[in-house]
Image 1: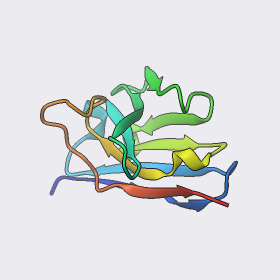
Image 2 (image 1 turned 180 degrees about the vertical axis):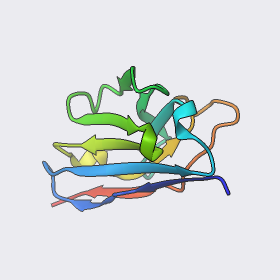
Image 3 (image 1 turned 90 degrees about the vertical axis):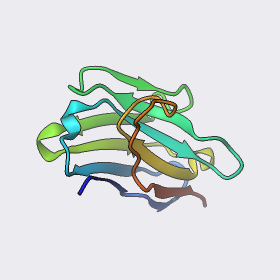
Length: 119
């Protein structure tokens, strides 16, 4: 039973915060670099952030730099995305996956969690 499950999404006001979790079961998440992606209606899925398998290297899309922080706790088989100073344009379904590139072969996706930023 291999699963990758996102949680923590919801409705938040602009300027608010959410913490997303990406929890793996059936495999060891620590073997993989993990990417967070998002897809808003009418837009292509875009990379938001990624973290290396060890957590020693992180990357962020320009649109979220300074606001989002990716981290991981491999002992808990979980990757997090702390989202601060949220903006309406952050509204999307957020997905985690076992690669930092959405085009990577063999990528395994979670089901996504909805983040809505609205007043």
